Length: 317
Image (cartoon, rainbow, N blue to C red):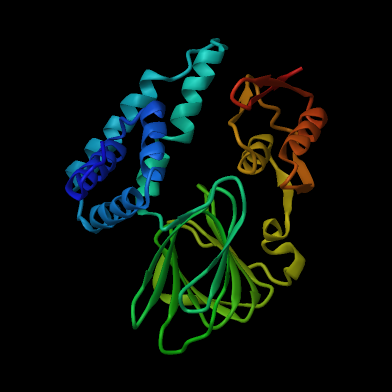
């Protein structure tokens, strides 16, 4: 039976509510994807409803309720100490891959999967998005605003002095002065690197006076800290992922695994005690993530267990 337009809109609203609730299951997510792909009308209705949802002002109480729901789901599926079973790992994978991502997904205009994507913006600018990267785009006649919701992005900005180009990330703002620059969003910090031209960085600590970065300079910040500017950064060390390489410099095992796993389909876990003394440095191909993980496992005394669903588990040999 063919749905009427009101029915399609109502179904789209149903999926929006389910996603925002934090209670959406993996089966429901698969059903949603099937429904959305069934016809262009379904996709159009969903995008319209999503834009309306994003325009709503959610109260702190509503936001708290959604977060509490996610927390309860995570607690119910927390791995018990010493438990090592496929069922538990699969349940954890569902939580990791789907639940925290739904809220960001509702906000995003572009979100990559495990591949790198180049997006041409309406003003003639270009942004290269790393894998698992999400951005929201808001262009007006007077401003060009991008919000980096997660991941890494490499911007090549078309200069327009009448319309400032701004990137917002973790309560900071990066404003282009006609340039090419990279923004890396990590849980611990935001890092801005300039390949060409100039950018002004307004950090959360000082939003009125910017730090100006020139070609070959890099600045990192958190909500409360601004790190010293690094200078003389070689061009080929900026956004190496956009050229197919992942550069790791003195990374912990956990950070290295996290960085590499974003380029493969299927979750990666470290089981048991993590060797903290060993650090990982090197350049790895992002189109060969399993080979990179095998190399890291071998050099840190770990073995790899392969599980259904393309899940990999690293554990001590």
